[in-house]
Length: 322
Image (cartoon, rainbow, N blue to C red; front, side):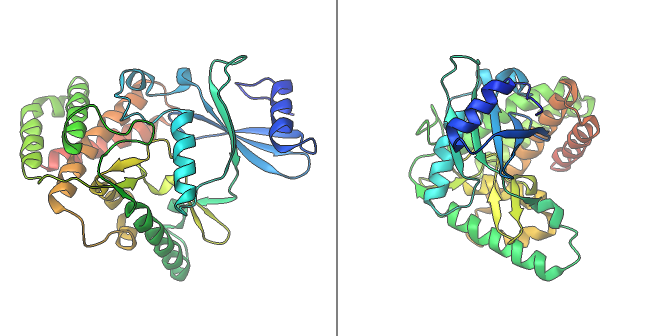
């Protein structure tokens, strides 16, 4: 049996048997790549069963510094958020991998970890170039219907399920303050952004000034790209990386999906969106993703090419607003 970087072999074996039963023993462990905030392992058992282990190890979080200083209502890291959101989504009929157990004891290891369902399949982005347009239509129509149900889940305050409301300000003001911080970071490392810092800040303020007050918010994933949707062999979509889910302006989600899903966004959009909010949040996403790409690039993220391309592309998109 291969071990993990977090639980030793004996402890992992004991954990699997405690959660799943004595008929389950670990035969193989493999690290699943792609996550920037938590570590994910696929665990194969000798009886053919597979599951996933999530580890919330802050020392291996590429956004550790931001996570430590983040407003509690904005955070997107932690087993408690995963647990709350998994339960909420499941109760609302939104597919996400089943949660088997969360271990928060920290009596032997300084981090939380959990076991969850392994969904056999591909990510939604793998269907962008599928040879059968009928398969594409069926999948993205199902995803659109599922997201419409999720976004229709409303409440009068914004924030995550662990913290009912952000500390102060409107939804867009909270995001704008974060975007200013990201803009300052990017300006220190990208000359083109530094040269246009004032104009970008003016654009941000101008776009925010167009937004009318709102007192109702929908439940959103928070970072819903096609890499955060798993698709099983029955073409059923599952949402993953759900820690950042919260009640918020659904335009925050739609403006992100509009460029992440490309032509397939037509299956996901609807007519009730506020176009002023859409433009505002899209601009903020470009700044945030430029900053995120730079941080991954400078903090040793394994896929350096991806990190650089992410920063460069969204830098151009942000500047295009000028």
